[in-house]
Length: 392
Image 1 (cartoon, rainbow, N blue to C red):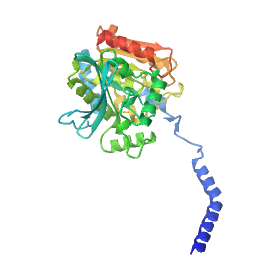
Image 2: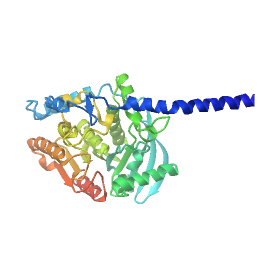
Image 3: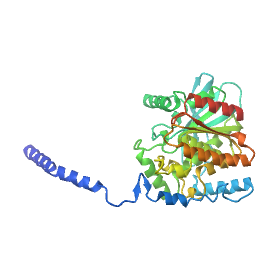
Image 4: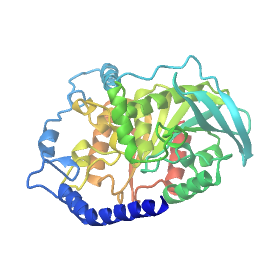
């Protein structure tokens, strides 16, 4: 039996050796480029035609609606409509403090709360020493193609594995000049909150981290009549309500801040939530014309992380951000940011300024271009702090 088994294995190996090259050739032939194609550079070949058809009829600049509050109500309703069915709300947040440690000038809390009716979420809350209530900031983490951590990108974690700790420190080093934004703001008197977005950190896949699965999960959510990106925004709104409910927080002084995808989340949150009074968005603002452009060598890298079905038929990115007017908003982009060409950034900034100017509130909109790459270093964080101190 043993001899027959060895012979069978030898025969199988010989067979694989003979068929291997042919199989490789077959696979190679299947992936060869054909003479005709419809998509190039991850965009349709007719991308310029499609962009010309985007007239943004519901933008403040195009709508023809004279009263800003009326436009704001109608445009916000359209955004929520495009965001599809929201997650069912929880009956109560039911917060539980699961861990705590004292830091220099503030306490770090690890809490659990009901994000919605389906998910109980872990989050970090930093509470300054002294008597509150304090102003508060919802810190929205970035994308970075890195889903292993989420909230740990914004607040220094504790009570985690060494792998998570090392990963968070490395991420803070590369994108935030080794300074955790939340800890920095907490030392200056702000309650800081951060939670994972769906698919990040402790809200990831049972099978493990895989960036390629983000878009597959998003597609499956759409099959269920829901939008994963919209769920992220709905969660940011409910998390802000949770933040407002905390005993240490002055519910009339809540801001939000983020870098990269976190910046996108920040201006979306400021546009959609009346709880937010001040917003800061670092390294995420542009126009669709430039963001989807072969000439600019640009296309969207985030995938379904910032994709809301049909919304672009009505408003462009700066049009949606303008829903936040006349709130105090800070936008910072980098001239060396390969993700957002300056041409698109400037065009978006101009559109937003036109809206704030119409309301006589242009002094509350700060748009800045820094000589930096895609990042949120200590100097930018200091500028964010100054903005919060002035307006929050």
